Length: 334
Ligand code: TYM
Image 1 (cartoon, rainbow, N blue to C red):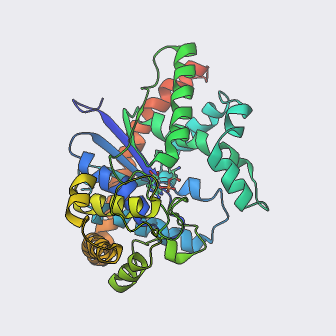
Image 2 (cartoon, helix red, strand yellow):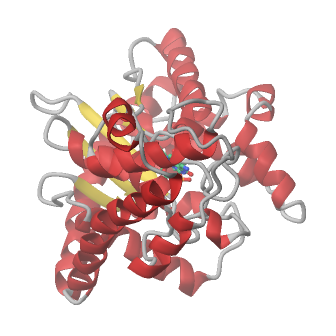
């Protein structure tokens, strides 16, 4: 708790072009939860270097992502929006937690297996211990709730296990966090292959809608989305392409699948795809304009970066000092 509010933590990587999946699965929920909780939203640049990055591009993307958080509606006066690398406590706590994590636990992580297969020439130790850094992110702020898409659930389970293990040895040190998964949009699939998640690293650009795609590109990608030959308008797992489009439509318009099926049941897929395109444009177009507007105000963004890093450091240090004491590090002489 901070004051009378529970704590929320979440983060996003500034790697690749963000997709509609990142927005609907995470960022949109962050905004809707931001009044209720004391929130920490991090641009997790330390996680990004588990895959080789061009330094200038990473810096640029990290700033663009931080700006996007604000553009999406997160007020940096109320929400702590900051770069992970500006708070050394993340790395310090990650080291300690590494010493409480078993190799077998990390070996089971499906994201590690996927990424190791994709980057076979660079299976580094950071990629392997990535989930421990993620646990440190969350536990450092004593977060109660962590809004994420379904793909992050396994990492969150590990975080809970580590927190419980540590508390079991040393007493109540960490809050045990819960995942928050949105009702719709928690797993947006590729428009070209609805058995795969929509992903920044997809080789087929038509499978993903990028947050910075222009309106015509968005409409075209929706029009070309893979559906099926059944020709029935239902919200069913047997029609994964249509199911995904209904999820996207619902998440963009805040409507329910039942409602949407009732409205479009007499229509063809083509007509619905057009409606999906318009719904996505109506969400992303204002977002893009707001990003462009904010990017012009360099000193404002700089002040957000500075002030919020200080705030994050303050809370991070509180937890870190407690943990360091528990594990037996000598007290600093001040
Ligand atoms: P990242 O950067 O891959 O994704 C950011 C958020 O977007 C969600 N997401 C999706 N949701 C629905 N459909 C999709 N197709 C889709 N693709 C991505 C992800 O679930 C995530 O919530 N390891 C994390 C970043 C992280 C983090 C943390 C998150 C680091 N530390 C602590 C929460 C708490 C990651 O790589 O997310």
